Length: 271
Figure (cartoon, one colour):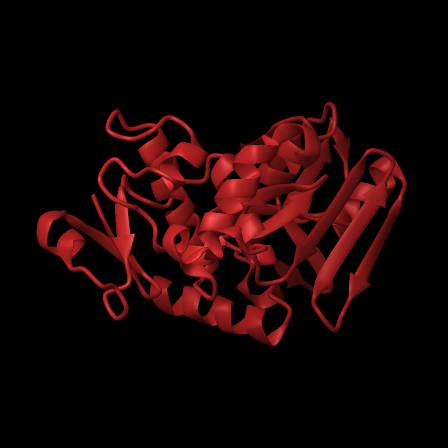
């Protein structure tokens, strides 16, 4: 039944249909102890709490807009910009990529954001009170901008190797490819920088895009998002140090000598 419910949710997200009937229950929302009221109440879905983006203008002013053609909500005020699209597993805040593994959706005409991630953006925390079925969000300083948070060189090279190796793959697969690079950075047998890992030749050229030059191509936008999510600490790799696409790989060494971990899209991942 749980799998069926997840499948139904995904279908509704793709179709852009409201999720009201899927919300297990409503929840009262308090921000800095201030009740948001019934119209701005949250929802509990699959064990996670969500709050409508509509709370933001009331708290900070600014403007919230909705693009029905793309299913995208945007909020802007002094010091904070958020862009979120229904069906995505992330949203952007001040140029940062914020991971939302259970996805973003619209409920009863309200665009919902997960409380924990919204609290992160607002510089606070989110706590669930089961007794009163309420979510309590604290706030602080808005999230640091991506321009100052990400190391420029790390983002530059990580986004390029992700794009060159996995352009067209699902976002989760692109994140896992980036994770492999970072896993190598942390491993004693590989260089200690992203650039060093990408261009490592100690065991021969490690990545085909280094040979064919595609590592220098401008990355796809979604690959930049994948790189940002990796640098935010999102890890879907299960410790993988290798990956390859068996349909195009020129060598089967990885599959023959390493331990299979998982498959995402066309890539097989190994440790």
